[in-house]
Image (cartoon, one colour):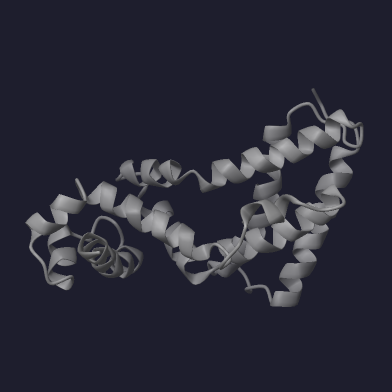
Amino acid sequence: MLAERIREQILEVATPLFLTQGYGATSIEAVAKGAHMSKRTLYSRFRDKAELFGAVVHRLVEQLRPPNANTEQFFEGASIEAILQRLARLILRAALSTSALALHRVIVAEATRFPELAAALNQEGTRREAIRRIAALLEAESVAGRLNLSKPEFAAEQFLHMLVAGPQRRALGLGEPMTESELDAWASDAVDLFLNGCRGTMAR
């Protein structure tokens, strides 16, 4: 369909511009020129630069999903350990991909000057969805008496942070990037530490 091809053409040009030049330095004029179309054509698809950036974020997130993956399969398993181990490896690989790291740099560098960046990222909702799904797993385990926690959503958010923060910092240049085997060991250790904590006594 022509409309879809035009939209994809715009995003093909806009994505590397945003990721390499940043949000502030990327103009609608530059995107339109790179896509070989008028600004009027571009504005007929995207209301403003913030909406275009939001579409770029959504596209990047979709590309990070495993091909032909059924989301439900990652939340199925015989034990909470098996599910979290599977999710941990998947989340780490996505968070440390080249495009995800480039997006993170743009957000950190420019979110203060351009609040619409954070809004575009929040609108994508992928992180919120992951927290919600993991929290539901933790709550079910707590109800069954296998975990001892009162705030499953808070616990899920802390799990994501302890899983991603260290490897991400090293991948961004604050240390030596981790190898594939080190990432697997990190994921396994993070899950073990997290679940051992949840099986203890947590402050209410």
